[in-house]
Image (cartoon, rainbow, N blue to C red; front, top):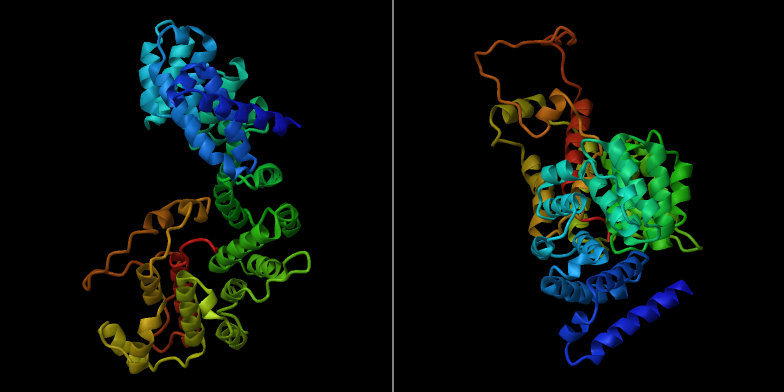
Length: 466
């Protein structure tokens, strides 16, 4: 009933606009707050999954922008019009239009002027200035439409320095504007902050609420990125039953893709139990429709066992995958996985050959030269050369909590090669060095090499499963 009323109002608005000789006359006949309110109604429909309303949003933004550029000081004497200007800016409006219109609003009190300055700083990319100006302003004391957006903006701004405070502000935004694009954005951002905080309970709650209400939002792919990263980062705190409860509210196709992504990340991170669970759920399907023939499910489920005792079974499984049904990036991943599986079972090279290769990196056995074109590094280059699409939300696919300390500092920086004359410094806690008679176990060496190559697989995964 309510959606029908909203649709009727919006259709009436567009009919009104069409009835004038020009769109300019139509927008001039409406007050800025009327245009912005119509924009909000459209955006709320989009958040609920009505993607057909997106062209209407673009048209309304264009009309609202033109009306605000022509607004004068007299227009902004009406508090509703000034609030509409600020809401327009926080709804995806033009920062230049907001800044110019604020300069024409000559009757602003100190609080409204501060809010306007803070929003302009936010829009033009000056977060520190925005935080400083907006910090003392309580969104709960403002009219609901403005307060909700301001709480969302403030929560987003302080998410890094004060995650707990950010979550509280995002809760206020949801309280002031339930069932709207503001709530959708607040829930989506709450998921990411909860992951960074290591708060599994909050992560599960926010994820459940998002899936229940906004799964079909055009911004749901960003939620999916945060959700997959959260499941990996918080795997010790989130039970498989809870994960299944959340995904059961999704449609079968979205559930399958989510489990494929979780299986892929878990396999790369060595979380065998989680990878096996997610792979099984991806293959299991729902409503009597299994995904056992999906080559992605076969590929990702193989990654967690590529170095296990069942390697021959894994090689057989990989060999049965239909390459023609994989993307370019996944074909490169398949090549790398097959190469790794082959190296695990290959007989170790003789010590003489190993020493020669160590002395001269350009030297190697004929077998190594033959295998080189399909190594993990080469597969990664092949994936890049094939036009692998960029990862959507790539940052959120990384572990939510970055390592700290020396390990973090060295993560992206190769250690300098030691000088031939430099003394060897051994930490006091290091185990005793093996004697010259000891030899490195060739199986252990192969496994270490395999793990390094598995890390390289992570770099070639490219886009999420399509």
